[in-house]
Image 1 (tube, rainbow, N blue to C red):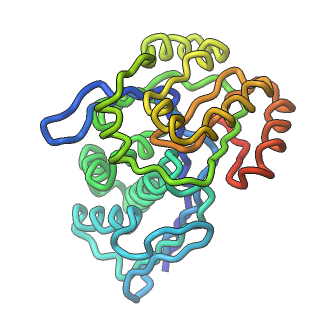
Image 2: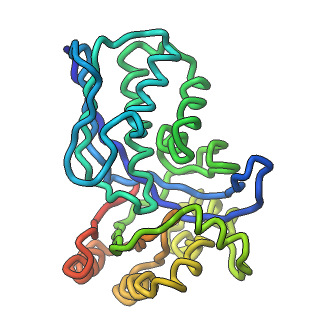
Image 3: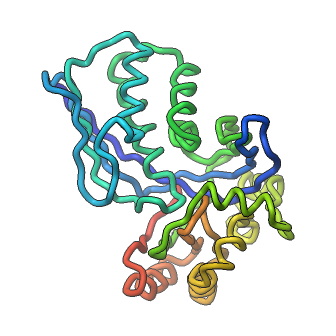
Amino acid sequence: MTTLYAIAHAKLNLTLDVVGRRPDGYHNLEMVMQEITLGDEVTLTLGTGKPWALVGEGGEMPRDDSNIAWRAAALFFEAAGMDCEGLTVEIQKRTPVCAGMGGGSADGAAVLRLLQDYYGRPIPEETLYAIAEQVGSDVPFALFGGTALAREKGQILTRLSPFPHCEIVLCKPNFPISTPALFRAVDRAEITRRPDTKAMTDAIAAGDLVKAASLLCNVFEPIVEADHPEIREIRETMLSGSALGAAMTGSGPTVFGLFEDPAAAKAVYETLRPVYPDTFLTAPV
């Protein structure tokens, strides 16, 4: 048997804009996305000689072929024309589920990259990214990593300069968000503030953390906040604690704040964590 291991890094949306509806019913998006140090631990055991299995701890997740990591592995071996002779996927969850941080997508991307590298890149990179897109909309970015501009469904990716170093506090309140319902709501909403994507990419290229933090923007945030004032309360706690900027990531409900001062970040973390157990200190990758 062979064992492979990786950290499946979560992501943040520094900006998120919905820019149109597609003929296939999906929406076109424009997002500046950032990989962060927080992530699940993914371990693959190949050649077990047993039926495929998915095991893990630390969060509710499907443990069958409906899991993104399982589907990613199945599509990889189908494309490569290989049989691994038994596979166990073990996921130790660190990224909260249903948090707008792409935790499951990152697991799938980690599986694809581990298998592609271990087997000596048996399929072209474009095929690997096609599999990623088939598995889930955030999987291509999770495979790409770093700092990127993502367009259309999130599969058109452009590498950006690395994001300036900072401390990040993440806080996930304990309520669910329906992503399909959120897209329906944004179709009906009058959006009064949209991200300035060019200004954000320029600030990142200049290494200007203060400017980049001032440009955080997610068009879903006001819609979620209207029903869940916790979003505003968490954001205001971060800003009053010297965050340079704070916003919701993805479809929520996680709110993140960017800090220049590690002590300030730790103080806000210690304020929020007793109220919201899913609160974390992290940083850009």
